[in-house]
Image (cartoon, rainbow, N blue to C red; front, side, top):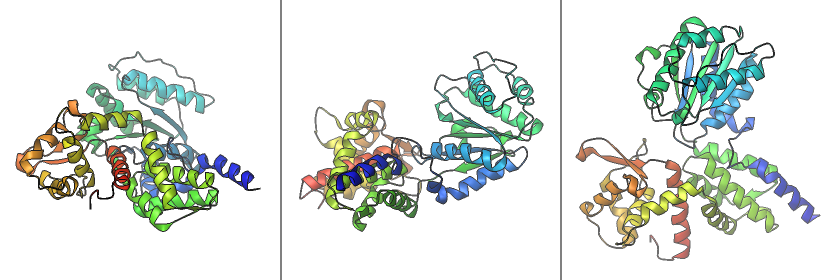
Length: 392
């Protein structure tokens, strides 16, 4: 009976927590209602379009998938979603869209196949979309993969014309960016018709909800301190909540216990570090590897990981000084590690950091990929467990 229950729990584990795939379950979006309502309002308003942007890993694709599946049924819309590749140009993007529409609309067959170039007149797109005669939402995901400014401009120009000519068709652009200018370039003429929706990191109570809902499906409990640590280590990113909760639950199931303890969590951390994406592990190793001063770059990078950031995820060089003291057990002058900070912004050290602010006395730093920071926090936690006097 016990083995049967364990088999059922292990079978349901991948449904309760999904670190490797965008979330699709409706109940995980209760706390994203504000963003969902903004997108819905854009669809409902004739001539309105939207951009959904934010940091990598905050759940943009998951939310776009939810919009794609939910809005069509709720509002009798044709909804299509495509993803961009680095090599995509304007023609290829619209060919993908037209092909996807043809699978959603029975009586629609594209009249044109665009040349795979960026030299596409928006009027061609408009003529083709006019054949739809149905309210349609087109979601263009991973738009940050587009590297050609001319492609960005062509898409922006088409959105502007669409807003004026076919008001019942809505474009939702989704991508990693700090602002829409980073994503589609500066197009002042779009401000009137383009709603900007920034998706931030999840709040602790939202992450807690993910853990509790998942464990309920598995009929497991969790120590409160362990739950707090999962939330803390996740840094607001749903991926790490799903990953740590899943691995902790797996340990508990295999140990035939109904409660996730500190021991389960510690084993999950070790497994999470091993299972982290190869690209992230390589970035970390590239950043800390040096032929001299063995732990110099590692210590600075760890201090950057542990420092308290401002609301924009940035920090100053002097902010990490006290943390370096705890790590190295000796006083470190700021001028002795500003070189390390600068190098960690360079490609030869993986460009794991980036500078924010041009003036030297106002320079701030932040992680280029904030998911890397969450990964390094796990490494620091593992090291702390293995070294009793670490950071004391």
